[in-house]
Figure 1 (cartoon, rainbow, N blue to C red):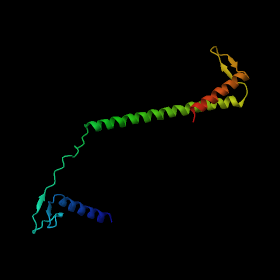
Figure 2: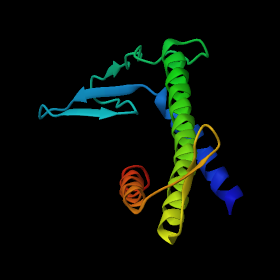
Figure 3: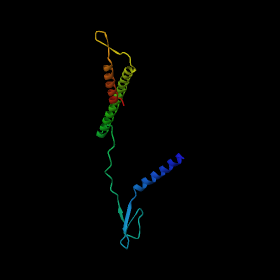
Figure 4: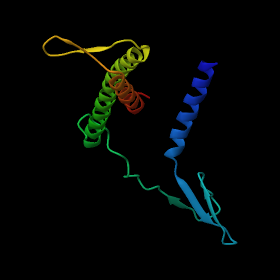
Length: 145
């Protein structure tokens, strides 16, 4: 099936390429009507129209063309932005997990302490624990989605 389709497309393309180089004939009949054809008529005065060459064809693309350089630069900037966003998301997930585990630890209850620079345990009061809960909940709502 594909071979048949390929053959048909090849024949159509070759036929079209021959027609593109054909001449166009024009003439005016006795009633003043203008006719166009790809075959000349012998009874009438025929004028041959030669199509103008299309000079508005784009230049070939090279690796060092300006738009190619701009495209590569834009593509590289987008890749860098995507990489930065992925790294930030990874860091954000780790930060969110740490916040959530701290909140879970405080929510479990019990006595929680903070080590001082001298190595002494300073136990937190209920007010400090509630303040820490509010602070952690606010940070989770702000950064974790």
